[in-house]
Structures are given as structure tokens and as C-alpha cells.
Length: 527
Image 1: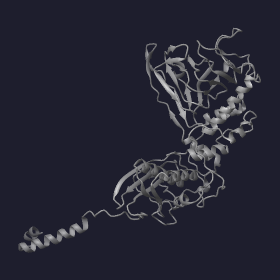
Image 2: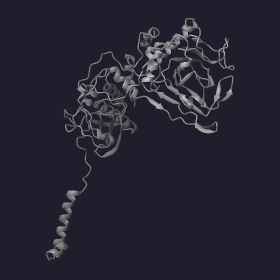
Image 3: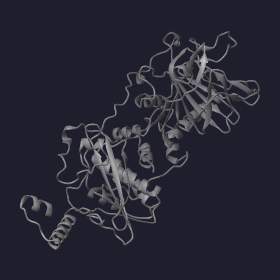
Image 4: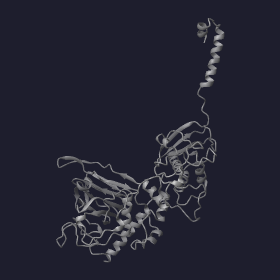
């Protein structure tokens, strides 16, 4: 300033004048540009001194069904502590996104060992629903809210409030571009874009919504790798092996097991066709599995009539049970099996402790892919282009790849995993059931085979966001209604009631049954 006046005005100020002007300029600049001292964030309403606050928000794009969440944790004085964000799977509505965002935030806070915290979502309807006495019956949001309540119990002290009281704060913002940047603050008030016109969207039943939601939770592993030189070429011998979980819930698994045991009893009483049920001889001193086969008669070895291994076309076995056909529909609809290879036969293996399946490659009378579903207990399946038999008598086998098969999982074999690698089940330590579904080659079908119309034209489910009305008033549920949690398979009176209908084909397979709805309410996105 003094230099400018000397150059342009030919005036030189005294030192004390220059100093006073410099001090005043510094003070003015500091007042305008200095970083303010951290103060509690606007809208923070901690319910008690010393509590942290967690602001939670979500974003939802109705065109793609994509959803994201963000959570910011502030200390008792409103000073930033931590933040988290990510994608939300299985969202069908903005309110659903808000509820799942809250659930993810609770899980994150629990992992951080936060004991006293005030959750501050920007959704008034969600806040009211969490504080409500009941949960909307058969509602996605109700399911997630119930899980939020369960998670909140695990904290020492926790409150759930809303920093805003605007009536427009009803749901997560419908802003598609924010999906690409989860950290961007989402607009959640009257400035939000106009919501989707839900009158123009198709109506979905509760059963369809639940099926979409469960399908979104399926977990698949398809990256099994083991390279081996075969016929002069190095190949991945387990290419084409897939493992899918969350296909059948606990209640469904129990009904399937009961169906198998029912047919086992019928077989022992001689009430099934001759080749449907049999207990094979021991294999090299190791007891084999009890076998029940449906749809087509498969011969494991040369029989007394001189028939070679493969499908015996002039023998008949019992048709596929209705429950098994529902399993096939589920696996095709949920993209586990392709619609071009819908199974029309199956073999049930009932293992006792110590039973095993020796190394083999499935006969090519059955086209690929095929699949096997596991029940009752977990075991390992061993793969390899050459498998070692360590002990003939007790079913000990060794191979380079061992894959655990969780209870209820579906193992799919195709490609090298079905045609190059052998597979086997070493002796099991407890009772187990497996059901292997396969499609017979057209040229090997039994002579009296008739296509099952129920299994024709099954199409995979098309996953798309479901739009449906959100009620701001929670629906009442019965006083005696309880949400049941299951940590392991169990047997219930409901299952025994439906048990009598399995053979008579009086009941459709879940997810369209009330039992599966109950299970879905307890299994969605467990923290």
C-alpha cells in the first residue's frame, strides 16, 4: 500500500501510519478468510451430553434400481470422527434405500465399538416407523426396520431421531447422478426432483417382491482355478464349477428333507417302482449311499441283465415329485441353471456317517450343466484330473481341489469341471442328503418318457426395481405374531402340517408361501 502511494501519488507516509493501515488490513482479511473454529454441525440434536451423532443419508435411482448410502460420525462436540459409504443391493423404493442405509450405518457403528450414539437419518417416515410399536406386515421396509431394532439393542445407549421436521422429508432423494458419487451430499427436501409417477409402474404382488428381494441376496462363486497339463495342454480343470448359496432357506430345506425321508420309507415298504429305490452294495468295503432316482433309470454298472452303465431306456422309475419340480423352477428362475438345460431327472443320495462317493465323471447320457443340492450337513467335494485313493476301506480320497459344500448350497458342474476333472465325496462325518438334477440326452430318453408340461418354458427372472406405494402409517399385525430367528435347521409344527401335502402335491414350493415370507423377514441383510 505504501509503495503504491509512493509510485502513483508521489506521497510517502510516516512509518506509524503505514503500520496502522497494515494492522487494520490484516484484521479485515482474517475476519473474512480465516477458517472458523469447529462448532457442532447444524441440526445436531444429541439427546445427552457426551454422545456422538451419526448422520445417515441414502440415494436411489428408480431407472436402474441403484442405491447408495453415506454415514458421517461426529464427536460429542460436533467434530468430525469418521465416515462410511457404499452401494445398497436389493432396493426397490426410496424408503427401502433409507432403511437399508440406516442398517448399514448401525453395522458400521457396531464394528467401531461406538457405545453411545444418536442416529440422525433425514427421513421422518423412517424415524416414525422405528419408534412405532409394530412393523408393517410383509413389507420390505418392515423387515429391514425390524433388523434395525435388533441391531440397536446391541448398543449401550442409542437414540434414533431426526434433525429435521419437514413434512417433505419422506424418502431418500431420487437423484440418478449421485449414484456415481456416494460421498456427495444428497438433497432431501423440497428441492428434490419430482418423484417417479408410480401410477405408471406395474403392480407387483407381495410374493413377487419377496422373490426379487431373495434373488438379490443369492451369492455365487465361479472363479475356481486349478491349472493342470492334460493331453499336452495346460488348462483350468475346474473351469465351469459354480457354487451358489442362499437359494433355499431353512424352512424350505426342512421340507425337502422330509420329502426325501418320506420316499425312503415308501421305498423300504416296496411302494415305489422297482428301480426307483435301492441300497447299493459296499464299494471296496466302504458302505455306499442309499439311492432314490426319479424321471429316468440310471445304471451305475453292468447289471445282471447285461445292461451297460447309463440310462436304461426300457426301465421306468417314479416321476419327479412336485416339490422337486418346484426346486427346478427356482434354480432356473434364479439363473442357477439355464432355461436351455432344464433337468428332467434326478438322483437322491442319502448318506449315513462313513458313507462316500468314489471318484467319477458323470455319464454323458446326461447333458451339461447339471447340479447337486446339499442338505443336513456340510462336507467337501474333491476335484482333480486324477484323484488318489488313500484308503479303500474307509473312503479316503485326495485331490488338488477341495470345495466345501454348505448346507442348502447348489453346486453346478459344466465345462472342464464336469468333463475333465473327476470328483468324489470322501467319507462324511454325519448324515447328509444330496439331490443331483440332470437333463437326459434326447437320444437317451426312456421309451415311455413324456415331457412334463410344468417344466417347459421356465424363464429366468428379470431383475428390475419394483415400484409400489409406501404407506406412511404402519400396518398393524396380530398381537400374537412373532418374528422367529433360526441359527440352524430345525423342525417345526408348521413343517409337519405341510409334510402330509408334499406327496399329494397340494402345496406350491416357497417363496410364495407364508413360511418363506416369515423366513425372509428374518434373513435379509443380516448385520
